[in-house]
Image (cartoon, rainbow, N blue to C red; front, side, top):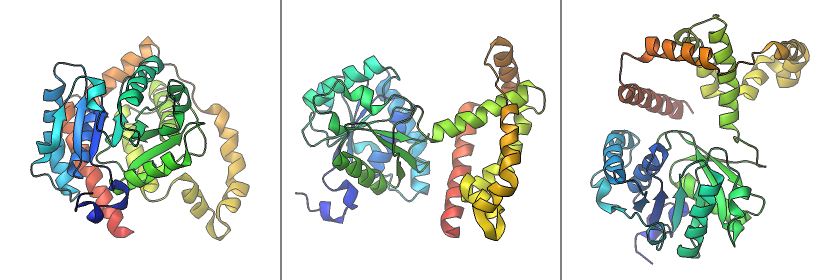
Length: 320
């Protein structure tokens, strides 16, 4: 065993080689984070421009990693590329898959991975909606696979939803929890599989009502964003919905809140919007997005978002 292993976070002990499958936005973000934590990373993607995309993406992410206190000198020295999937996972301790959101494709990927990867390798899929149970039907050892779903971008946003399949072993879940924690993430293990998991379902529910309010002409997209960031966005950054309403109930807490305000809130649920992303609505949303955000390149908007996110995380960390 290497002399450096004992000084590493416990969750990374024995994890030196990571293989990232898929060089999209999520895959690049994972790659940068793994490199910053000292792992050797192999990226596998059949696209001809994958290496260029990854190297450019890691370079863009490096300043944020440095701001998080992670080392970035020689960040890509431990990075390699291998288009052949079986070869890419041959010495992996961790396989983080970020392939297309298609069950047939994921099953084919994981069949190959299981046959070629070491027996000790941790198998994690970044899928945002395909259950581990369905993917693992392609495996001889389904207990090895778990969903490790990050919130974008993974190198910055703390949450990773760990979602076991019906046959995922407790040992696999605990290994995943320890590993993501050692990488500076805040993993949450879901107690059961559900389409879309938790964070995306909450995001989708709020976005549905946001689309409804914009489509009905109640507010513009820019105005709605301001409403959220100046109210519930700030509130939920320090206390989630349940704690917020618990505090809203005063000394009686959440039971008092639900008794006195819950009935009125429930009465309004049927009136919430049921918008459709039809052609007129899509056109309206597109026009307003161009008006509100189109003056700046997306990359600049994303960089500003990440700086603000980092500042918020720093402030919250100090407050806690």
